[in-house]
Image (cartoon, rainbow, N blue to C red; front, side, top):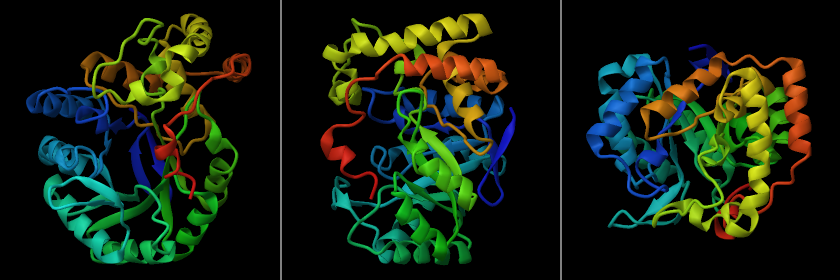
Length: 328
């Protein structure tokens, strides 16, 4: 697996692994033993960058990642996130990035991850009630204490990132970015270019849409978040599948899959972009990892861009209440 560098010196595999879906959002997941095996399979195949968060589950995803990676801890980079509040029963109750809550969250994540340091610690969503300078300063203190190595932010507005970066350099931004969600190109990519920040696209395969596995007749099970997302709706799915069909033509000519073309396109946008596709299956893990070896020429990229221009993706990427948490 090729390697890439995020920000100021965080070296990771060119394709990472987003672990969230092993515990939530896509219906019942694999049993714990199967999840541990798959994460270790990922490391065996050269994936050294694994992403989780305290809110996934909540908490159980960090526990899974911690148990799976403990035997190979020094071979991997672990990213996790803070910024949500929970009640006494562990239910998410909103946002909180107060300094004391960040420090408590870091200690709890360290325990669940079975490690003495968090390699990349993201603010999961910007808390409008806490100055971002206080957030960045708290993470700076955690870095000084040796509990955190690098600071990251997720779905933050460019102006907010600038303010945070002035206090504690931001190593990576995590944003949704893919062939069917290109908003980061307007402000986030230029900001990363300017400040030397890496970009970690989540949902790089459009929550599975860009794999070609979803068709006009797909029915989402209870607990699958895609059943609540407008752009997966029956009324727009037919039109959105046109993008997958057109990319399939490119994939055939390249001897690749649609998913590999989608990931290869992301890798070609900047040398500091590291997508983190998730999966529950070994064959998909191998397919995703293989995207790092797909070579897209300038002509290929031009063809893909022309293909994208021919299709208008319909529907919002999030329900309204989740979209309101972004871009602040």
